Image 1 (cartoon, rainbow, N blue to C red):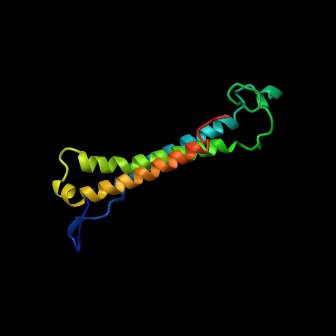
Image 2: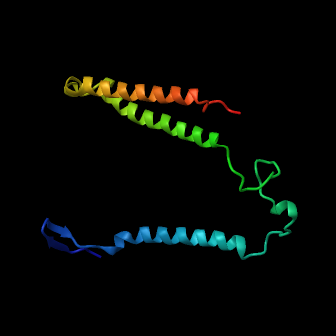
Image 3: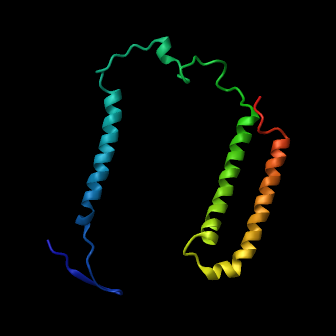
Length: 146
């Protein structure tokens, strides 16, 4: 089957051919059928032994029996450590691009002469602010685990 050319504002182009998209459609259908088949195979066919016992119905938590309610409150230390981890990650997100542009080989020398000092001072202000926040968190005992 040949595709006839069509006149468009960009020039002469081949006409839209839906047969070029058939492999994508076939792949999508196979993926959906596989997912539906896997779910149906686990729930519809009684090929596996089913003997629900009290032990099998218990939630599994790291090989230990669950203790207490699942709705108990977590200590605030978990959240503080998570937030500090994110702060360290964000700091690195700012430092890596600057370091690559400022000190990497093959960098633009014009950028270094025009913006190098200003950006260096901005990074130093950022790092000093970060160190002050780190010392403040240390003094408040955020890093001490009970």
